[in-house]
Length: 525
Ligand code: NAD
Image (cartoon, rainbow, N blue to C red):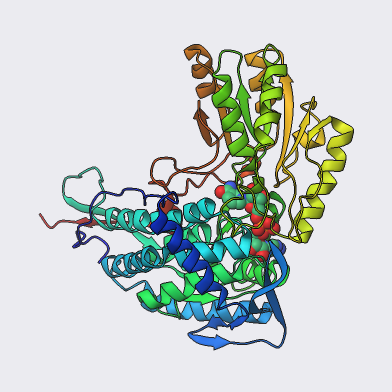
């Protein structure tokens, strides 16, 4: 079945265009969506195990970080028992789902992509409310969700077709890719549509069954994604859905003997714990669990004295403060040549002062809230450390409003070994570091345990070549910002403690959800 030539033909993949909010009709569509979605605040959402709706005694609200007293939805609180039931259900469903032809699985997931495209503004409105994304950031998350679905469907057709093997006289040989089994899909909250849908779609389109457990911060967006997958035709038994704590429900998914693989995106600490737990064989387990672990970053932009200073300032500001610095790819260190350091810092502060902070449903605000009270406290903890480790140039306080608003914060004159130059902060927080020369800048950039994204602003081709060779990050950008990876164009994933470099949105990604089977048949002579 898997060797059959794909029977459906799709146009070449192209990225979903971003919405142009300068057009009045698009502004109106987003305003209408925000109103419509607001009329649905407070509803209760079930979990799904073995095709059945599951309600628990314990509940957890999802609230709006721009207005924390606003309850967006009520969610169930899964226990380890629920997780175990969900893995058993997914295991049972695997026998059926793996036999569904790849073309049919592709058709179903393309239908999901169509539904999301039609309901684009609504999904973006939920993203605005649940995790504090500005209109443009929410739209980018929704567009990336569509991109992942479209890209992985095309890749599945390629992998379902004949695979090249060296011909051998007297034998008929071929290689097919078959699914692995039950996948625990554990995404973070910061791209609650794109990452949850992307990892889930990759697992499903390759013929695996899934238990999806989203972050405690973003169950609502995940529920919407799951509802759309069901509406598109994904059997409920093949996609089980749990909401609840990572430490109990997530942990049980990872440790279950019938879990075959774990697709995780989140922090370094949890990623390492999952790696450790998944490596321990438990009674009844008959495979080595595969882990796809995409983790944190401490991403740098090098500003060279031969670079375009104004572009560099713009690139650093957008990378550091876009979505409140809550992207794994966010620039958290500007490493600046000493020759231009003072001018750069002056321009950086002036540009950052122009950023408006406030409720994310209001398009006038470039920055919304950070995701939670806990996140805000962690960020202020780092601001205190930063005041001791460097010079506070801007920010460092809450911004007005009842939401979790943090001013964009810049700390200058930071030592490369300072805590704020080494640890992921995950907020609107930038450390500025002085470099003696370009080699020193590269050394500082490579001097953390992470290796996710990085950028260099320089007009000198020799320096750019050096960066290409020795800036050790999974995603390197030259003369542009270090955020905003596009599916297909910029396969994404990091080195070292940033993860297993799975390259989401790239041609190698689906292989992580498959295993190759070779069949060699002697031909009668
Ligand atoms: P997190 O690690 O706190 O949580 C991620 C997920 O893991 C959540 O669903 C959570 O419930 C679950 N979890 C927590 N403890 C668990 C356990 N013991 N066992 C199993 N699951 C458990 O991360 P977060 O705060 O949601 O997300 C932010 C982090 O994600 C940042 O570090 C960011 O850099 C990283 N991130 C990385 C990428 C990437 O592609 N490399 C992309 C986005 C975010």
